[in-house]
Length: 333
Image (cartoon, rainbow, N blue to C red; front, side, top):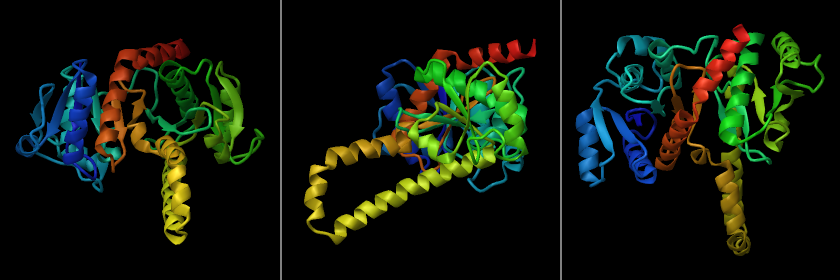
């Protein structure tokens, strides 16, 4: 198996991307080969300067770069030789089995739709975000691929999220909740009320509406919402984590004796940090495509990239797409 890695995407490209690729290749122990896609001379120079082992890594030249702030549709159309577009083209041609990118999310989504296309029966792909919770994680989708959705889109998101939670996270009959402003089915806007009716009439293990506070408490395994709301939830969650970390650091600096207590609490702080660190999850799959695409955080560290690559391998080997495709076709018949 080969996994293409957009080496020019993200805030710390290409250094962190390459370092993460090497870590993933080493941990993969020959199970897959990584294809670095980007400016060849820059990638080769970095690998040489760092004296990195690249036995399971090859390079495909892509001289253009899509910036984080560029218009996705325009950039994908004009920059045919960008690292994102080239990586997607490699998957379309069958040269790789998955693509990982921490670059411009809109460009990744747009390029995947142009090159790979949607699975038959799936109206829109969705980003499945793995958020920490008391029960080991909650899948939130859509995390930002679709700002505007209809009720049928949310129903499909729920099916894809349930399949993902079942087959990759081991959740039998995943509990599905619809994000709203209250538990009563009459609460919410027109979209949530319509979606509630569809979800309640489906074969899913739908438990009803959930509120934002329920996500981290692990009340459900899958939370469904539109991409606009989902992305706000994701960014807000990240800000809370950073805010709490800063409060702890400031408190330790303000009270000298607190440092002694902090030393004793170090294992607890470490466990909390790992539970809240996005790098542990690596990236989020874009479900519903004729292919495997993992979208990483723009500020991804080498560890995050490594975990994103390993996530791509798991999704390919678990045949999630095949299961989603079969379910979509069953719904159509």
